[in-house]
Length: 259
Image 1 (cartoon, rainbow, N blue to C red):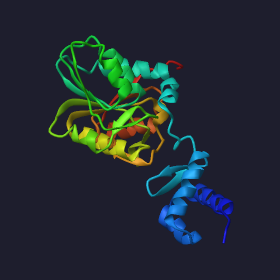
Image 2: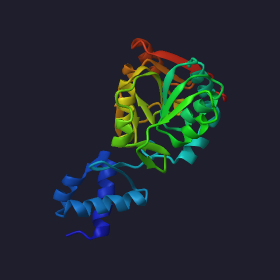
Image 3: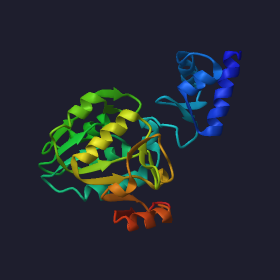
């Protein structure tokens, strides 16, 4: 029988080799309970050796690491501000829109303060705080369970708040964009809410800086060819330009400030 330290080392090695591991398979392999394995995975996640996921864990690297809202705000800020200006130009007075949670959509919210008669729904606490400045617009917040790390609401209550509603446009931020995996995020409940947002919006507009391409979060929101518009910067890989053109997805490219 392996010691706790030996078992956890084996789990890290297996996760790095396979990319992901499953709680039940590990319990069977190491002849321990699923509760013990979950404790192992939680402990390894806290040490930054793996990333905990539903039913198991995935390999820890820069792609799977979820940044805090403060870290995300600092990343590629100038690019996000430029993307936000372009995104806001697609909004017309009197429209109903959804702004997903995130730092890029927070920048869009800052651009909407002088618009009139908008109905803006968001699941981002940071986004809502920027929207309240525009007195001419109606601001709606989904409610639900707040994740402090991302300042985003999700869960059944958030999903229920969107029932029987329909919006002109959704501005969706993502953690990863991949041709095969599609649009992805790190958190299951946020992915569920994002999928619902897509279904109740006439137009789905994804806004992301080019660093998100070829990244994959663990949870899929929607396939890349099932969106209407993608706004990004000029460092988008050529293969994605070709893919989006072939799928008739409108691509808006903003010059990268360092090019």
